[in-house]
Amino acid sequence: MGKKNGTRLLMVMLFLLAGCMVFSVNAQAARKKSSNKIKWKLNRGTLTIYGKGKMSRKSFNWGTLKKKQKKKVKKVIIKKGITSISDTAFRDMKNLKTVKIPSTVKKIGYESFSRTAIKELKIPSSVKKIGNQAFMIKKLRKLTLPGNFKFDPEDADACHLVGGDIPGDHKLTVTFTTKLNLENASLFTAGKYVLSKKDPAFCSVDGCIYTKDRKTLVRVPMRKKKLKIIEGCTELCTHSLLHGIYSDAAFDANCNVEEIELPASLTSVNSTRYPAFSYERAILNIKKVTIRTRQLDGKSLAALVFDWNIDPKILMEQLPDQISYKDGKYVSKDGVWLKKDPYKQQTPLY
Image 1 (cartoon, one colour):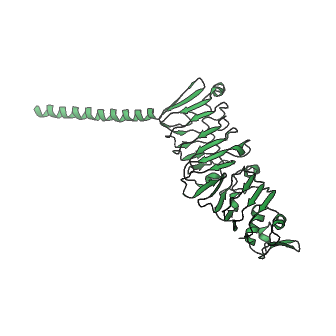
Image 2 (cartoon, one colour):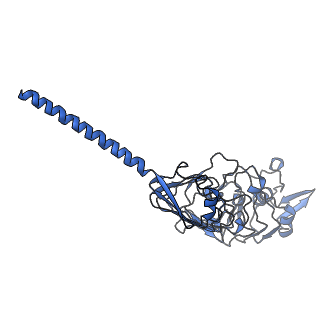
Image 3 (cartoon, rainbow, N blue to C red):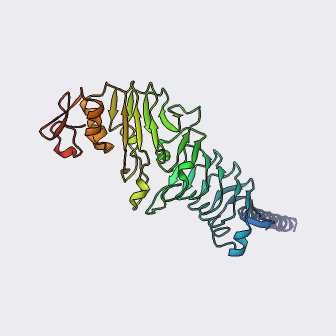
């Protein structure tokens, strides 16, 4: 009898223990589910997003607020604990001017801030991934963000973060706060780049990107009109102006540089170093060239003619001792034919 009671008691205890374990698991699952819930509230023009976890399109997106509500939004506060900003989250909030993003955010979705009224936007260094056309904002003048983020094109026809036919983008300054992935510079049709002083490979001078020792010009912002390469620079990479953004529209790949000054220190023009990732080559319309160097060989001069579409006649006018015109051809002193079609070169360009 005692053994039977003992067995029954043991079975009851095991049953209760199993029930407690199931309850505990269910409770944990419920807490996990509730912790991923994102909530929002709109009060006197301030939209606050709060909770923990990812801001999915189901929790908040372009269609969450009605048209009248969107017009009321002037400020967005994203609370600490949110780990991502959903696609199209704040798109078309045309009166939105101020956004606060916490250091917990790691991803920003495509078109998330497009068509708003933001003038200055700071993206924390915690952000590792940014979606296509996230910052298509006409009034944007200052954008600060990490330099080593991963760009997500979303298989779109036009791939950029700020670009295309956005008015005023020549006034945009893009500041990179961490080590720069050079491909990311091509995602902005800006007027000026500013790099972190701690960047191990590159530095910014007069809005352009040079190697850390300032010897090589690597990238020029696409909306810069006058390019004066600094004295001390010895190498010019033609891809510094050829890094158009990928688009099916030609104007998206245009570069605004009209005037260029080459310093006396320049010794070479390189067509292969620091290549741009773009599928489209930028369309150049350089109207004025000032050449102070006398150290460029025929290969470098030919690169200026072919890559940058510079008329060889303009080069000859400034370098009469290095370029001659014979039988309808412009030829460098060392025998390189300066012609725009590389496939018909008598002397190879590269």
